[in-house]
Image (cartoon, rainbow, N blue to C red; front, top):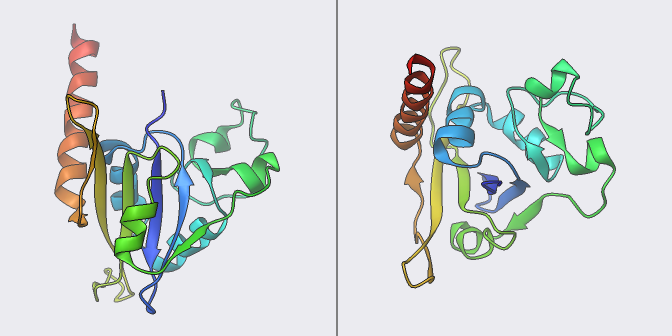
Length: 175
């Protein structure tokens, strides 16, 4: 079962470009990966412009055989439906603002919608660095979908959830 997500970046104009991502979209998976490996706005924009993906990893990478899971590059690079499998109509989407992104960003079964904002942060080399935020879609006991109405900071949530995942893994290994 996939935890679908959408990854976007807010442009200087206020519009947002975003693309779909299929696997492990929860904060402790994709969210943690975004925090750890995707702070460069240029890299994020380049990755999003390649369109919908099966999974984001550490690097954008080059064209790869979508189905060749034995290729070690599958473990480190993004894999795209268009570039790597030749599918059509898998390009990125444009949203006019954050409200529209929240409203329309869940149209492909996404549970999480991520957004990089350029808030003036810099990396250790004094280059622009984006900050990650997210919204979540949840269901009530009655089956009604409830979507957050504003973006929340991702950092602490992603790290805590990632630690919980690692703890569960360690508990299984020790048992």
